[in-house]
Image (cartoon, rainbow, N blue to C red; front, side, top):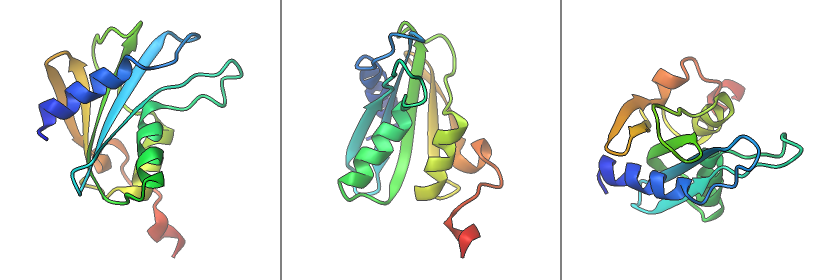
Amino acid sequence: MNEKELCSKAIEAMEKAYAPYSKHKVGAALLTETGRLFTGCNIENAAYSPTVCAERVALFTAVAAGERKFKAIAVAGGKDGIIDGAFPPCGVCRQVMAEFCPPDFKVLVVTGNDSFKKYTLSELLPEAFTPENIE
């Protein structure tokens, strides 16, 4: 799967978001090293703190399926499901990525229906706290 296809899958996942409070829909598409694809969408909650981001839904679903090595993630988001610029992963999602992904892990941030910006995890989360810090 190429990067553009991965971004398209993130846009598709965004359509499934449950965001009645913020109205900001987010979708994520995660590609594993074995070639499997896992998608996620944000799921809000009236109490707010139980809300979960699309990136974590995709990552946790993949981990629950036994995957531990990841190649790239694409993230798409926007108010009312309309992509109007970048919607990068929040800090919590970046930290969760650092638990499972190497510093050169690709993060594709969709900026339009046919455009995206490419980052590495280390660019988005320099000096990450990782399992190595605990050893």
